Image (cartoon, rainbow, N blue to C red):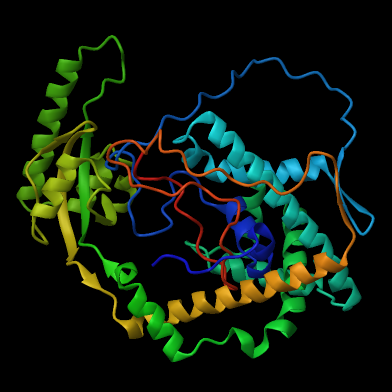
Amino acid sequence: MKSVTGGPGRLLSFLGLGLLVLIVISGPACQKTAPTPTDTNVAKPAAPAKPAAEPNAAKPVAVEPPIDKMVATVNGKTIGEAELNVRVAATMRQVGAQLSRYPPQYAAQVQKQFRQQTLENLIAERLLDEQVIASQIKITETDVTAEITKTGAQQRPPMTLEEFQKRVEAQGGNFAQVRKEFEKGMGYRKLMESLWGDKIKVSDEEAKKHYDSNVKDFEKPEQVRASHILVKTAPTDPNTDPNQVKAAAKTKAETLLKQVKDGGDFAAIAKGNSDCPSAAQGGDLGFFTRGRMVKPFEDAAFAMKVGQVSDLVETQFGYHIIKVTDHNDASVTPFEQAKPKIVDELSGEKRNGITKQYIQMLKAKAKVEYAPGEGPVTLAPTPASKSPAAGQPTANPPTATTPAPQPAPAPAPEPNAAKP
């Protein structure tokens, strides 16, 4: 279901206590965080990663840090260029792939809009900081620890507080800073709760109206769950004859297929022989829809019945032995089942609306000054000269306003995309 929430970007993410932390703790490339398979030995290949830096590259010479340029002031308090640039860079990392589909000049304009929206969010944070102090809201260390513990428990897989901290630090994050961000977000949320009150309640009639108006969002496409055994055909030694490697791989795959057909334990054979990372799970790839896997694999999997084992299926990765373990027909989620999520999202939309109005009121009363060259930017219409690549889903260009997550942080996004 598409999100129905909206609001002033990263600022409102603090009210939900989710976005920043999820960026920091999103799992390593090999971790699956949802049932959708992301194995690069089955899924459509992703764009190649940039080569790692040379291990013996010269280290940069230390220089004096530049003076932090003022970009705006809020009631006399400065917002510096360095803080703004850190925020913009984090946003650009999230939308860089989308921007690559459009002409460079348009991408540059979008980045400029991101910069201004991020600055507006920083201004709003300063204003809320003042109100938190004026309201004498106190968030204790115990409160912060409890909230982080709760957030860790909601990840996939769940994490203890210690595991949460290790994940943050392993990815170069500063756990003390993460705690400060939690503290700030909890203060904002406590400030706003008194304004939200009953205004954020969602009636059954509102929920049903949204459901009826967006039925397509609740349609579930056909899904298959499968396990596989992969024997790669790519030579590991450039001096090896690829034809010989492929012939040897086919012989091995045929031997493994016979073991499976003779009643061997598929999961055990996959664990001991498959060249795919999914071998650790007995070859299990979880559920996937059409378009997620390379076509020969997809065609075979969706043509099979539950419990059936395929003959050898050749793809660009090698030879596969596929076993279908489950199948879900296309369906529509009934209203009663979809209702809790609809209510949650519509309530979030109301929270964001009230929060946005409150921030606008604070800003109207505050003294906000911009440095020369800073200020609102209007985004040009989406260029029609460059469309997404053939076979790619059509996507709207990224915008500077990020939908706010709900009070309970959502699971971390999948680290690997199945499509390029």
